[in-house]
Image (cartoon, rainbow, N blue to C red):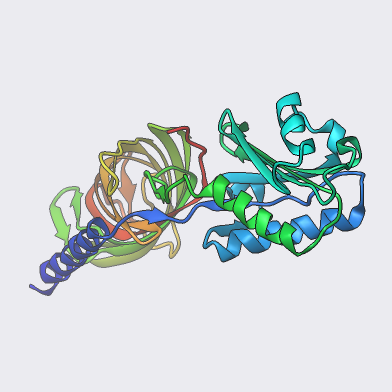
Amino acid sequence: MKKPLFFILIINISISIFAQQAAAQNIRDIQVFVPPVTGNVRAEDNVFFYRQLTFEVVSQFYTLVRSQAASDYILKGTVVLGSEAKALDNEILNNVTNGIHEFYSKEKNNNISFYHIADHHTDLSKEIAFVLEMINNKTDEVIGKQVLFYTVIDTSIAGFISMMVYNMLSGFSDIVRINEWCNKWFYLEAAVLWAPSVYEGQYQSINWQNFGFRALFEFHLLNYLSVATGLQFKQDWIVTSSGDSRDLILEIPFLIKLVFKPGDHFMLEPYGGILINQSLMGTTIPSFLSWFAGFQLGVKAGSGMIVIDPRFTMDLDYSQLPGREIQYTRSSIQIGIGYKIGFFLKKTYK
């Protein structure tokens, strides 16, 4: 009676974790990558703007990441001569040189340019421009561009950098995680097995106390198709008229799975494949090959999933007991319960 209660307990735990995951908001902060600021005007300006950009990203409560591959957006800064900045058009030039404002800004086509003119009579062609671009990392599209013109770096520049970062990022809400946990290239799985088996020879015997363990490596070739292999260790206990024979079988599975992802909390995988069998104790000679078919249910739990995996297995040839003229076939219902976690997120364009 204890075994059914154990499996009921595991299933109840899985359902409880699923309910908690469904209740929680599945969102995360925007992840921003800031590469070193480039430009051949003044090296110390590059360092200043890079430090200010990273400081502002963190202080405005966005997630600063060290890798471009892990980012949602890129803030790319470049320091150039004012005459090289494309945003400098005649209309803005006239407004600034006429001395309307010491600090002047103009919004045009969703881009904002800031002008810091210490001397209203300064030749703008001698000014320096800090160009900030916001790039969507998934599409490589420039989705925002701002320009700050200056002659010297003073305390006011930091305030303008803060405003530029705010203007760039404030219009984007937190990222909703859409199936990230089940949209990986590779998965590792570990599970315990209960494998009641039927032995058919001259007589039939059933053993309810075969248990095992498996570790699988799964590769998702396509969004709906994966292949997997690994190792399984399973008890094999056959009872005959001349006594019991206990063995430990090494099974090497090769399987193909169809992958279905309904909603954001389940992964459904019907599958089939073959097993290569090898006795580790030498007390039996199992069939070299077996076939199997099964269905795996994955329930989101943390960064991975709890898996419940029933399958049916049957030998393709006779097994036998060494030294005795006893042949038999084996069939088994295996129920696996374990945990599976993925690695290397596939890029999506949702």
